Length: 256
Image (cartoon, rainbow, N blue to C red; front, side, top):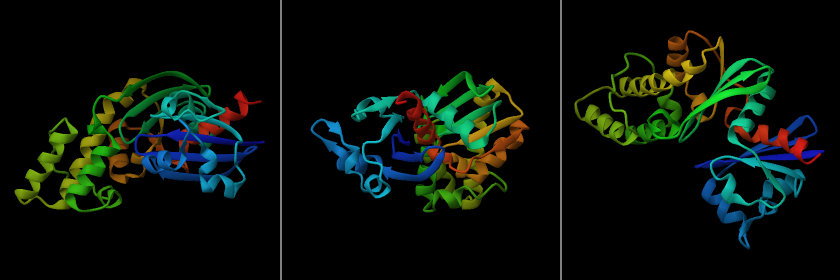
């Protein structure tokens, strides 16, 4: 039985396709490109996605989640919550049953306590982008480097005090104007994000934290975060596709 999971994020749409228990493919599209390609007669027709026809996944069992899950209106798709999708994906990817999940996305942060493989409680921060991937992307753009390059730096972090993503950009520009070294600004940005995540993560203190979302690729943030939490951080193989994987697993249940 083939199942497809779709995580409709604010910036990207992530896909995960399974055949039974085997993950066959993952794919990512810019959200605007996804809507432009698939919008048809007031709905989203995913059969228009070339990757699905290539993989033999046209009109299979589908479940969706994410920022735009209620706007997508994919015909025949079950809609599930982001918390459930990410919990299912993290349990499947890690094989763990007791941990705290940190989903660090482009615009929000989800912290989910998992006990015996099930969601026990959760908290979200979607009010400010200062602790998210969008903040890091903006800082990298200002500095003229890639997010990957920014994530490599942890030495002598410059103290960044702004608590807003927009003001944070102004602070970085000011630091460059004053002659601060780029590598120290990068380290400061990584430390700043980690510091904002720690209070949320400590809401559900755990010996192990599973980290998903785009920020999971930022080694600097993870280094600072692990040090401050004093805990093991586990990054699954497919951190940005975690929600889509969870959806595909749920699709097998709801369409059984």
